[in-house]
Length: 146
Ligand SMILES: [Zn+2]
Ligand SMILES: [Zn+2]
Image (cartoon, rainbow, N blue to C red; front, side, top):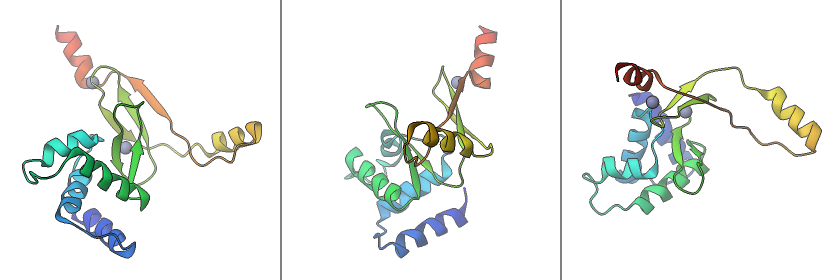
């Protein structure tokens, strides 16, 4: 994992006046190390041994704080579970239909789509989200061997 990213994230928090608690530190560390786009529940389960008094709601509130200062992106999936992504640079996601794994990939930002959408609908466009779906290599391999 990147120590530099963690240091930068912490100084961003300091600059915006967000207090850095041990829990916040641990959540950030986990998010940066995890490439899996965890849910609040995943993070809770990974850290509950370290912080027995922490609840899922606490994790969620901390993630919201990170989102507000722009450190973390929330990817909502219906009402059930948002997944959280430490913001490095803009990227897109490919998602496995079988196991739900989310993998990052880089592709030039589709700015024209935003412009077109705005032009056609009169919306003031703020952002967009594109997801590619399929079967990941692990799941495809498993299917072949069965
Ligand atoms: Zn899969
Ligand atoms: Zn991502």
